[in-house]
Image 1: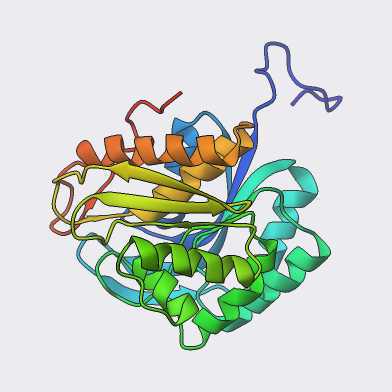
Image 2: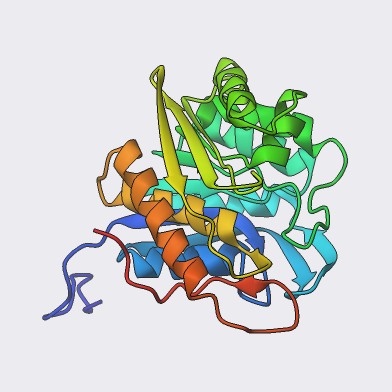
Length: 274
């Protein structure tokens, strides 16, 4: 920035801004770190609000330290007071108090093209949210342009069995009834092909992909939702953003590096679609 506040000579053109509100993963495979890598891969500017500090690696989650709700909101205000956010996501919400604070803040000051990824359990199987968080998350649904639960998350949020395509669509309809504008139920836990079901404006879209045989991985849900946000920030429509995100995750899974002794992180350096 020049002394007079203007952009310096030779500065690049404005870049769409994407925001992630999520937990931090010190091993770099999930959470804030995966989101920012994904934003960079899609060519949008990444900003971040941290909701929790996790103590984890590729093997396990050892501890989750929630950030105070007031500090979460202060971070969010600092970002949006200065940056023009084009699209945003909410990932890990560690406590009911943080969920309530975010819902109240979104009522006062909405975020555009908000994707809510209801992270409840890490890829290792360790719980990330405190008791009562599942119910509290429902207050965020009316603010969501898209909700992206996997099968266990959809079941926990709706109280229904979600283990096949019919159950996925049933859960998506129930979550729209709870206020979400659109719902993408992710089928990574299905026994055969990884089929995702998107319900938007009453229309159903299926995204079918062969399973990538790389063993246990982590950070796929974070990466998928971040890639959708990046697409929305760049001006893509929701269906296109989801399709591009699915393609990106598939390629990043196929290239997943053998880092650490547990679940593999994705390789966010793969070429982005489009």
